[in-house]
Image 1 (cartoon, rainbow, N blue to C red):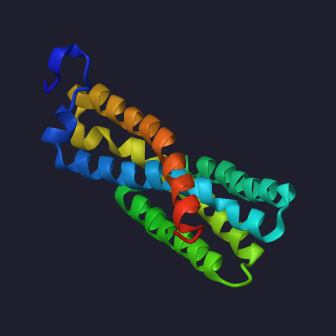
Image 2 (image 1 turned 90 degrees about the vertical axis):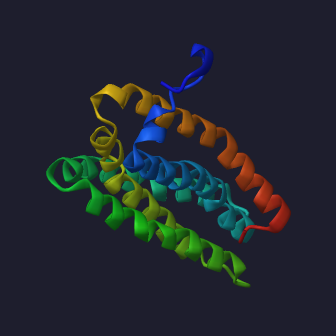
Length: 179
């Protein structure tokens, strides 16, 4: 094990498993940091355009409803299909929503409907492919390293929950909403 003094996380799954490294890097990049950045910037175009708390609440609702539906269907899809194509089919389109939001933010008159559509799309796609991600972890790490892989995954989520909104707020404050 690669764990000094018993206090640090066991990094063995990252060291010995290329498949887990790829899953972990994808998770840290998309699910954690970029998701937290998206959460910070998703409702901001609405506030800037309409100065309405109602619109910000509706943006949150537009994300929540597809999240609920997507997680129910996503679990069934992850159980009944090959997980790799499912992750690719749901994650690749997720890159389009932040690009659409950035392009919208650069418009002289940002379109509110685009904020709702992009937000709902990210909620649905994230949850359709979401259950496939943790279900794919045992295969590359094996049962003997599953606890360490789970701890690493959980730690990345907690770190991103702290760093993502901070980074998003700093980017918006410094470089503007489109950044």
